Image 1 (cartoon, rainbow over the protein chains, first blue to last red):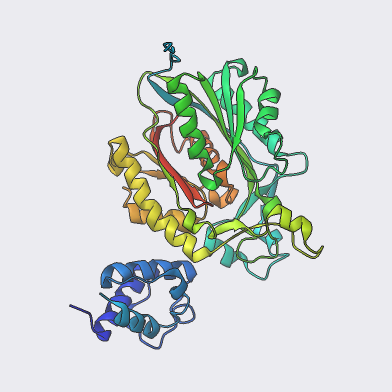
Image 2: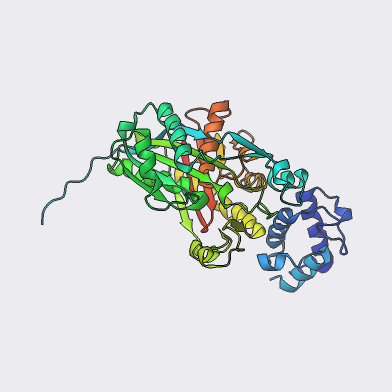
Length: 82
Length: 334
């Protein structure tokens, strides 16, 4: 069953926590991965790959750069999940 | 039809000795920061690189290779006259004709060995090792010298903040020879030409020659995120396939020597592969930078020299880079 936006944000929070050590409660829709959550370009790749596995979605390299905020990523996953 | 007699090879092959050469000049991140707007902290956090070696005009591709080869021969206890083939992997030898392998072979005192260069980027050592194993087992050469050598400082754009800090120079060499038992596993290797633009030389030589004088000298450039994803997640699969092909598991490994591209790639690979705590991981990139084809033998030599690894240890080596190309195999350390 497809995940809701809320579930996706929760899942992203766990992923960001695991990869960058950011507390899950800090991960919210309006937060920027690089500016607010200290996720650099390489960690972002790890976040994306983990999100692909978790939500059964493909996020190509050329789309990764458009995912600036947690909300951007959640919307992308919501739209593209299988 | 006449009957053709086959060559008499060895049942198996092994790495008998390893040697490395690092240029005398050590270049700190502070020097890199003279030409890019960045910081020591940024460079270290993105790459794990603190220093690298850059070659002087005298430390040519051939000169560095001769030094590394001499050490590898001494380590193997093999004399230059016994070498039947010399394989050199490099992308940064600017004189393409003749192959630099012939000059190196001559300078180390080998006697008319087969000698040739190969181009397989950062997978060059694994490609060379695989060819060498084939020659020894098939019988075309009893002892083969495999050299990975680069002067990547010559192909670095010092004003590119994404790559200026990345590359280093050096040479690593191994002697491959006969063995009574398997000591070089099956190679899992391949290429993905659809990703040829991911890591590349900015401008081809002929185009550079024919364009305006303000065209920057060719340099190596890459799409960082795409390379990172491929290197960590696709190469972890290849590494696992090499373990499977050798009939062992990560538990059986003593040492992991990935191409020293970037510490972040190494750390993520270790995590993705779920390598056990007891496996020693090569992290030579911190003080050597990315030396492409030279990185694996250089890292191997350092692990053995410092005692972090020992002769007889089982090591997984994996190279990956421009092409894109890759090669992974399990070896017994010399």
